Image (cartoon, rainbow, N blue to C red; front, side, top):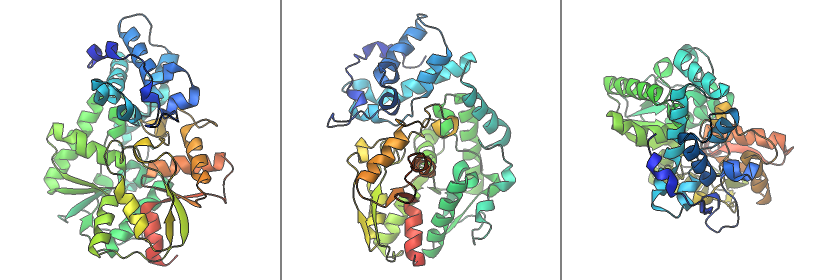
Length: 386
């Protein structure tokens, strides 16, 4: 296994489980289960034991390995030089499990759906652009930007609303963009982190070939997960594009005066998406949008930016639900943290986060006290006058 020589170097000191102030456990599966086997250090030792033949691949071991949300908190807080490899180690172990043919059924079903239908919803490609049916959004044909919507934005009801709001904002600002519609393949980020490297390579090469054929040079992504794949993984396959998350585009448009937010009176708090923040290094662009909207009061949760608590949807968990959504799940803890700020709106910058946190609000019985809005939706609402 790649990185196998690193496994023995973990001392299980436990720093990887905490926030920077050591006041909160921040590893999502550890915070839920409180067994060291679910912490990065414990998982490292289990992987080593598995590779050495001391333990076998079992349903329990699969649950432990696939409960990791690949949120990157361990990378932020590990005290050792191999910190940058931690998430990659867990992904590599998943690759070994996939290659061995024994993986959790939800993971197997996810790969099957992507392989057959090109999306995890088992829906036809013809429906990929139906979210834009009532909008003057054009197919990509040499415009300055390709707006890459992704599977969640194309098929999930919550994601589709965010895609519509972001598109309306781009249109208002006069941005030259188009979409691929039914030609848009899956970006493959979750395929990769779930361990199917061969399928990811196929998706990456398919996307890169299509982008080159169409002359795409600049990409705006709806989802931070696609933002991560295009920026960090595609260059290894020859995919060299300028990639921006939509929040970065809006932040620039507001700064240049091409987007002028309207008034929207609300007390809000912001949840950092792991693949935009910790993985992507972008913490300020969504906050710049919120600060620019007259009437919006931004209050931070105690855990924010590099110390943010993952919603629990990363690492493929949005689709496999291996981490689960019980009372101590990260999404439910997160909405309780949001409520403590006194905010009425929990703002996100990721369609996966939006869905995870809305479901958590319902599970916590907080309907009417807290709502979720994407930063693009809040900007759209301010510009529409409500």
